[in-house]
Length: 388
Ligand code: NI
Image 1 (cartoon, protein in one colour):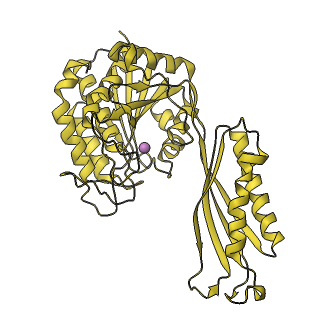
Image 2 (cartoon, rainbow, N blue to C red):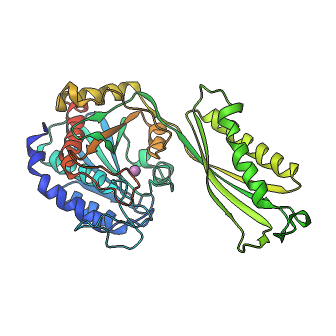
Image 3 (cartoon, rainbow, N blue to C red):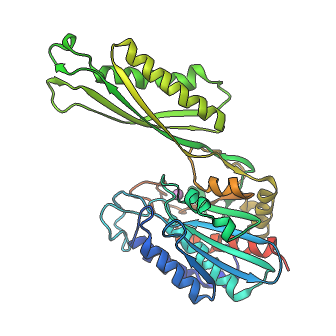
């Protein structure tokens, strides 16, 4: 695999870092050990370190001469779920797992930091941004709100995510809209409890809630323009305690995704109208909470082109994934991209000749063969964008 020679030599060291982080997963805003691990390594490389932004965030600054400044971001958090891989370095913390490969992201950025601190083949400033709480808690938003780019100015910012469904040795780039906005909602249906054998004495909130689940699917199929991509999914439905009792209430939770902020605003209104209207039709009432979580992720044209050139330089034309699909998944790197122009790239990490479990699976495994590729991408990006 064509990667930078010095970084290829670091494969064993990076693998050890990655597996150490993997064995000690920490979730949103609790990444204390991870944060200390990162800060210690950066100091060891001779990089200036700042800690405390968004609680456990770390920013390393490496400057060499006058020139532009570039931000490189990795996320550090794990997920609240059990690990079922039986790997020798599997999670030592019950109910927590690095199932999204953020341990790999952190390691690759550390590898690039070590290489760049040694080689200094650039002119300008590099900011190594290690952020907490990517998984639904919006650590990226908190870092931006707490003044990330005021304290650590950058002209452009880049992020990376591993793609276990894409061949190792390929990198995917898509200019423009890449990932969807995300919102969450909660609907509480208030009916009236009764004996299960006498539903006519009450108002059944489970029946009403079921009608709401079905009716919400009309948003994407009947109400909004089919050209717009919108997904509304009810992901939780909790009601009742006994087989012979109809309860008073039912609670539904879910998520809405779209590729345009204004369609998300209209989706919020539609969820409210459908839930309230359906409840009223059956003599019940509904309370609705709607929370906007992440904006649409938009890659800038210029920075996407720069990233493409880096991939061609490093991996050749074949290294560029030809058809990277857009996804309705979301990413809080979108908050950084709303503040500075940049690009979020996908790094192929599929295992060769064996199954690669998907992100967020309890059997997911990061492919350590990809570590030098991701670290080399970061390093070449700096060397090319901040060329001497
Ligand atoms: Ni992730």
